Each structure stands twice: as C-alpha cells, then as structure tokens.
Image (cartoon, rainbow, N blue to C red):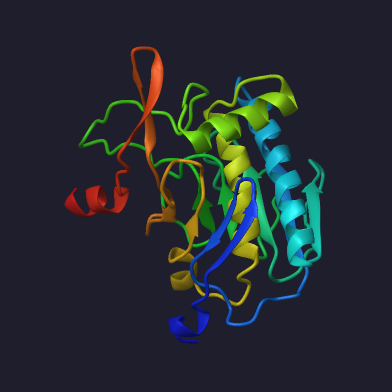
Length: 244
C-alpha cells in the first residue's frame, strides 16, 4: 500500500500523548494487544518497571478515549510461547540488549526495547539512545534526568514523582516511553516498516521524536551543566554508521 494512503494526523489533549504521523486512512477498532516481557535486573530494574507501569496506565486512558479495546499480557518466566494476535506488539523491558528473550517467545509483531540495541534486527525498535560509535567516542549523556525543567519535562517529572515518590531517571523514562511507543505502533497494525519510520512521538523533550533506520529513537539527550540537566541536540546514529 502506498504511503500516502496512511497520511493522517491526530492530536489528543491527554497528558503525555501525541499521536502524529502516518496512520490508516480510517481509524481501527481492532483490539490492541501488548505483551510485556520483564527481564530487567540490576540497579535500574525498579525504575524501569515503574516507568512501564505508568506508561501502561496512561495508554489505557488513551485507549478508552479512542474507544479501542486494549489487552495487556505479561509474559511469565516459565512461559515458552505467548499466545497473541498477529498484530501484537511486544515491550521488552531489559536494562541491556537481549537478542533472545529468556521466555523464548516468537514475536507476533514489533518488539519495543528499552535498552540500546547492539545491532539492527527487523523485529526490534529501541527507545534508548544508540550506543556510541567505537570510532567516534562521545560524551556520556543520559536519555532523561529528574532535573530537566522545561515545561513538558517538569510536568512528566511531577507526574512520576507523585505516583511513585521517587524522581524519574533515565530508566524510568525509557519504560514510560516504551509503553507509549508500543501503543502508538499497535494502532498502525496495517502499516509497513516505512510508515512506522515516519511516525513521530512525544517524549516531553521539546520536539517530536522519530525512529532512525538503525531502530533507535532520534532524540535529544541530557548533558549535565552545573549539576542540572540541559537537552542537547539529537544525533542521528545512521549518519555516523554511514561515515564509519
């Protein structure tokens, strides 16, 4: 199907929700199925899970506003095969790239990763910034920091703090963002990869975010200045890969 058949822009006045880009010419009423794979461990695991949970609560509100049935299934540790629809989207909550999830489930749709990917693969989309090029070492920057004080960032930080009693760090932001992206991608169950690459997402970073060809979000990152975070211009990792 030609891309122009998908052109539609939708905006909803819901906190933390911006639906913009390519979408089916007619809204879908087919149920959305999200499968959550929890493989997080280490110091960031609790924050990551808290971010995912907040994101799932917010997308559930959005689904009710859109009158779209939403089903969320959590894959258990002993589950070898996760039954799901052909259009399910998998959210893989891991702190480091895991090419083969422990549950061994065969994905039925895109997999949305919360960690940087070490290599591109067709079923993987990561909300994390790309790993820095080995040939071009970069300053270490975070995907999020609780001292970000732009209006949108302050709103998100406040929502998370009120909900959890803890500041939103980079792991929590990734979990929240992954839930949003998984939901918005699932809304385009008929779209092809080119159409999904044309989507834009609201990450409360002052500009729309989009996926690059290597499967990561092109997004501003946080650099610390005088003990506070400031947003730095995004870097499209595809350009660095082409130059290597």
